[in-house]
Image 1: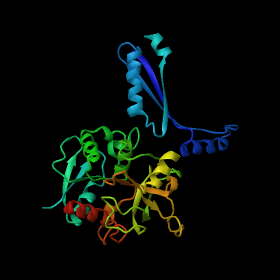
Image 2: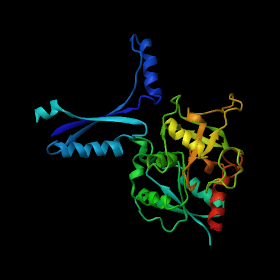
Image 3: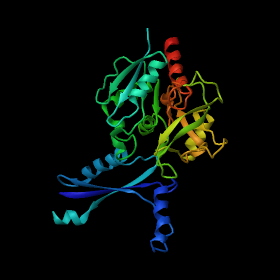
Image 4: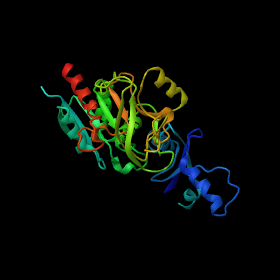
Length: 87
Length: 234
């Protein structure tokens, strides 16, 4: 079984109040020097069978139509090589 | 013949019964529709009510968008059938791309519940013809994902084509809760598609159709009488 990771982030121009709330809390907790925080989503997909170009194309399509809303979000798709090497 | 207005129930929908009641209060027949049923049972119009369809998992409205009933709704809406999306229903309509833009977490991150003053910016849609252009109405608002966003080009297009259907009235007294409640761009509370048959808004007209409940006024009834008038005259 191989793992494919889809990371979904709000587009840079979209206000992320959740990220800002986290960033504002950091100095209170003694963590200085963080200028900005943005919060996103990570999907880990355990894929049956080989993760070839066709499988990746399917996952890309899945991310584009469902996992991300491309009106407001960007996404990246990558194979988790560590998990692939184990299997 | 009585007009038949369908009201869809998804798992997690909350306001379907109130919406059916509002439809009946306006004098139409309310037809309950189920999310797994592709068939719209010969309704003349459809309302997507408020709530948390599929628990708002992934994103508000994202999973319902792929339910069997929505396939038919999208098809019929494109063919001209009137569709109203209230709150979660509005979120579903943006996820289907029947309406542009997207809905995000309120800028202050809090759930908000209050009476909200709106200005009717477009009284020519299928759902707003019983209002007057520029009329101010007060109906309940309750959500956490109510911040309307779209890119500048889309916002300019909506403004230029008169497709901003409702705006939050922000010039009233702020102490008692009037003003932009969620950080929506350009104070947008609701929009319409190009043809004017699909309308989405965040506040809840179905909770203000009887003087006894909601705001104590019936400012929301106009949505349901508008559609009835349109269907009867059609």
